[in-house]
Amino acid sequence: MKGITLLALAVFLVWTTPAVAKDPQPQFKSVEAKHFPRAEGVELSPAFSDYLYAELRAELTKAKLFGQVIGEDEVVDAADAPKSLVIVGTITEFKKGSVVKDALIGFGAGMRSLKVDANAARRSDQQNLTAIHVHVKVSPRWNEKVMARFAAKNIVKQLKDSLKSEAKAAS
Amino acid sequence: MTFRRVAPMQWCVLIVYALVAVKARAEEPKPTPENTIHVQLAEPVKPQTFSRPLKFFLVDVVDRSGSAQPMMVFRRRGGIFLDHTPSEITRAGLETCLKSADMLAKDRDSADFLLTLYLFNFGLSESSGMDFFGKVEFAVMLKNPKTAKSQQIAASGTSIAGAAVRKKNVQKNVQEDIERAFGDALRNLLRGMKLRDAVAALDVPADLSGAPAQPAATATPTAIEKPHQPIE
Image (tube, rainbow over all chains, first blue to last red; front, side, top):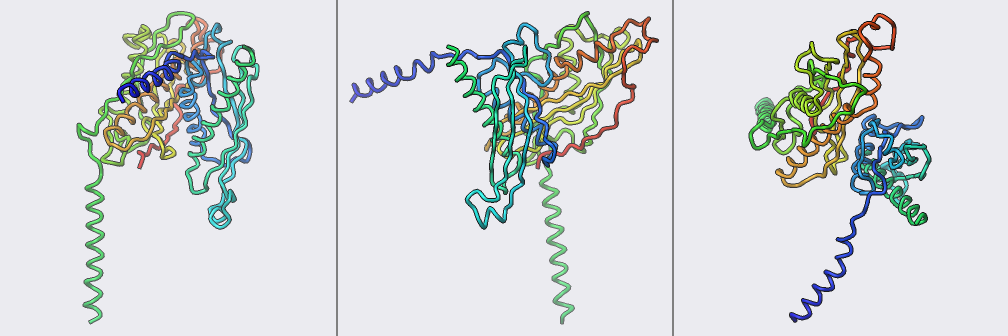
């Protein structure tokens, strides 16, 4: 019994050691997220844009892809510019949804939806590294800020996947 | 008979209303040492460097939040209060940052630029309900005392912190959230391109002050008032 426990412990240690040893080096020195403006006809509260910006910054910090998540319009050293990203985007569509349709029909009918288009560009030459399209659907009963949270998570996930695949292709 | 039955009913309704009102009044949170937090910068924000060494003097911090209770940042669960007013915290934070980079003037006569800060938001803002949304927003009037020209710079900081169940953790998360948002706002001001551009526009030699060098705003601040509501 003791032997099995020791063996299990050894296997666990061997299994987890590479994960501990692997210290992911941030691909970019810094990233700057801008406030996403609303396209014409998008009726969202003014606080929504602020909240989306805050969630996006929080998710970018969690992603650990970047050395630093800097504030909007912050001065960056010219030497750091090639290793710095800028994320710009627009809220292109917002549908309020319908509680009645959601309750009576269901299966996604009457859902509240949000579409966001974003681009991640290198600061030095403004070259677009990836284009991100996010479509979030939530229940019409939920607070619109929940959509901002999901949208921010989706944006960072797509950005992470895109940058990782790019790095793999380059190596 | 009818009169006798209705009158007690009206009295009952009145008494119930009075009791509810008294209960609601009793639930209004009060600051105690247990529910008071101390907000300060974890480390001073290093301001950007300018073409020449500059000294700033913080003239005044004006609270324009319009909040009746500026020190209450969270109303539910007995409330969470700040130990100092937002104006005092902001003044201390900004002066610490400037002092750390040797950019704080001793008095207004020795300053290259005078700063007057108008605070619009300091604390928590409405969030999705799954987290805390810290927001600090202010505008700074940057004035060159030699030319008497000034420009307004807006700065804001936001932060998201996770929600918590235990009151102690709620208090800790709210404190961290506000501290991060405050640090972010100061960073936005001191390392922002808006300050760099404003300084570049206003920092002209005194003998050239008569010439119309740059378009600059008047010293009168805008009377923007953003109502601040503590989170229910």
